[in-house]
Image (cartoon, rainbow, N blue to C red; front, side, top):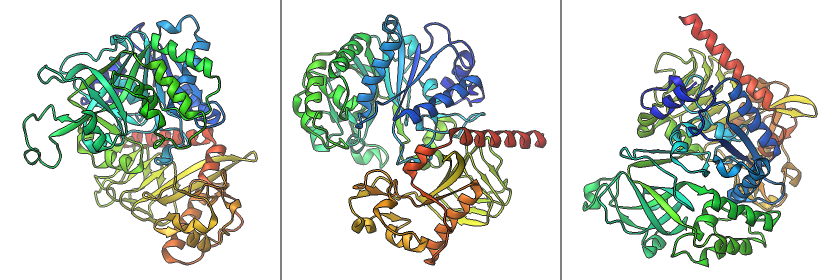
Length: 583
């Protein structure tokens, strides 16, 4: 799989040449690869996909791959997931864990801002290169290919929806110091407000691509004022002495250093394991970055333990747990590896996904991203825009796809026209239809009452699926394509009631609205969603019969992983056959 990557991807190419589909040489790759999941169902989906990739020799062999789902109950955050995953590893490898090099990838959650990854997981998000198609897991392992050789036994913690690209000037990124070591990337102050920011000791050395710096404290999603107050703001290391006007609109004279991944040695892991065992069940949301890293550095204080601005639900245990973590980790050595020549890409929202895959020339050049990836698409630009992207998809020669649109794992017929800035995922559209600009369409296979069913999600790219209201009287504030949900329900012949929503009756949202009809065939479900869209556009009522409506939340509970993966495999075989016939 990875051997076919273009020359701009040396790490990917080297992964393919050395360990892909082979036994990983001792000491040259991870001893354990851990992926976290939100619940048992997501765990099973991840396990199956990993097993399939290993069977197809798309991953290194002889590696211990594990998926650990969060414990049932309150949301525990990626910090709670880290603690529980470490506990699971300790149970599995009580005597050997201390000698293992572990990568822990946080992939739990339901990707409400990137819903084409909701069913099968964002760590398995398809990327626009490779044959077979590269996924985020493959890229993560490729980018970090040099880390295991240059690290002491310990645990590297990272997330499933970001990409870190860097040049270290010939120096190796080494994780060989005690305590916790984090990577840092120069970023604008605006980006710093949504990430973690390091306050570093002043450096007397000249500019270098890679610097090991001591960190005075870590700020979690600070305001710009707080960054200045704490001394986190510094001159752009690549542009010393230049004014903002000289730098142009795409650069800045001042930067902060933001976070991505971090490493813990096994002494620190043991401290956290002891804390988990004392704590027992985790009943509050812990952040691996905000709660672990904010406890570090000589200037760290207890103040952050009372700040709940970034907590989705404040549980009674939270303050005490945060204070305990602070006293537990205070004094732990904290090193930051500054990568001055690096870039951090986040692909966690539909907007980011579309931008990076269709418009970001920098990322496209660095990773060799392509517009047509293991796909059959129309030859003429008038039908398939060069600024669109197709990933493992089969498009009829007369199908039209507009710029800045991504089509993945789908089949489109001759009478389909897709607007700009759309995402079409996992679907088969054979009917005559026009998908308007900024549309999201994704089909899922379900297992309901022992029967295979299908539902197709359709809404606007800019619609807020997470926004919730507490009562039916507020439903007007929920909108699909700019039309209020109340008006949409009237057009679709659906009565607004509390029973229309799954889950929490005090948090009514597009995510848990039972508005997507399910049918016995994929194409019927696509037809129904397209008819609902037509009704909105024409403001004329539509009748969908007595089809059962399901919410996106319910779809994930009833998702039929086997059938969705079979659909992808059938596309793969059909594309292969088409390619062989063209030779």
